[in-house]
Image (tube, rainbow, N blue to C red; front, side, top):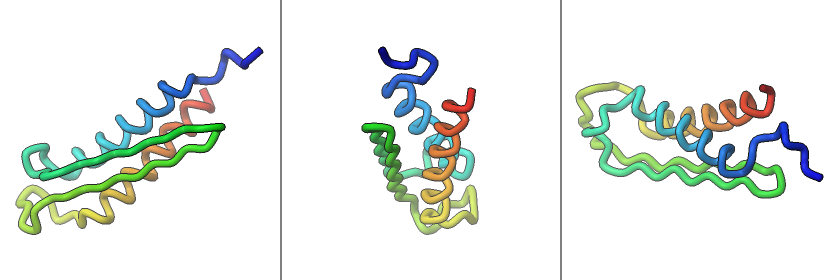
Length: 87
């Protein structure tokens, strides 16, 4: 019988995706983001997070580098899932 204290796969994926998107939109206004793709998989206890971010070079609302923000978003997603399992 599975451990019912563990979050289900859907909760894990949703938590990671929301955390990643939250990080991106903490750096960029939604209207500045041309394209955002957050891909999250959680299979057999392995979490994979991939963040693709496309913003114009002249995004006036931040000096943040899109690649750095995408990396931060992926790390934040993993941290959020770690926190979810620690609850």
